[in-house]
Length: 228
Ligand SMILES: C[S@@+](CC[C@H](N)C(=O)[O-])C[C@H]1O[C@@H](n2cnc3c(N)ncnc32)[C@H](O)[C@@H]1O
Image (cartoon, rainbow, N blue to C red; front, side, top):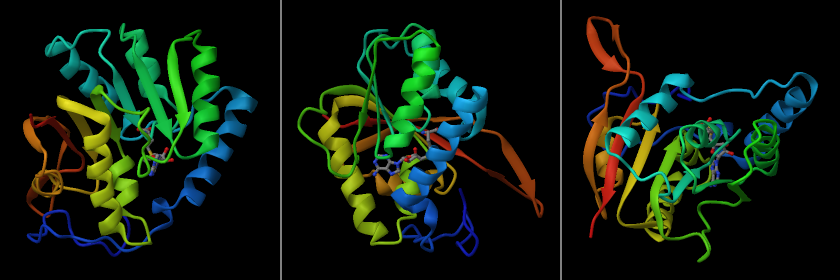
């Protein structure tokens, strides 16, 4: 989701701002999922899985390794087509919720979940930046590409990122886990963004690339725990 004109990922400044991008607007996602919904209706294709299948395997492997109980409440923030929820359900997780501010994303998720014969996944059209009290007490929150999208909002992205952290504190239980996958932020930057209220537990291994003699990661995947 990187955009032209941004500063390089290994830029030393922690207060990096991105140029405004359509990827940070709801209009963009509404149009994108409207198209994907149409394609699903035509040929059953579930559409794009952000960061690929391995990004889901990585998260699920971590949950299994930690022996996260299968009935733990899990919130997928900005679920898109909901395929991560489908994979979690197939692995036995039973208390799954997905939210997205795009109604067409939620409709697509609903269609895919029904096709897979899964009935107990909760879905809601919801802007994460304006959470309501009924969305709270989750033991696990997962974000795959949504904080990236929020960070590209053309309208006061810095404020929106702060609101994101506030919302996360509202929905995630104390000592709950937050698993984030990002292609726009480095580990150090994410540590800085979530420094208040969260501590890092683990960095999950992601593919490395070599460019100009330097080695870097194209995707960052971190597990945070909300402080007591
Ligand atoms: C890069 S896509 C990732 C979708 C999905 N998580 C995946 O991995 O395939 C970003 C998603 O975040 C959603 N999104 C962005 N800002 C949001 C917000 N403030 N509240 C809820 N959803 C949001 C978009 O509609 C989109 O579905």
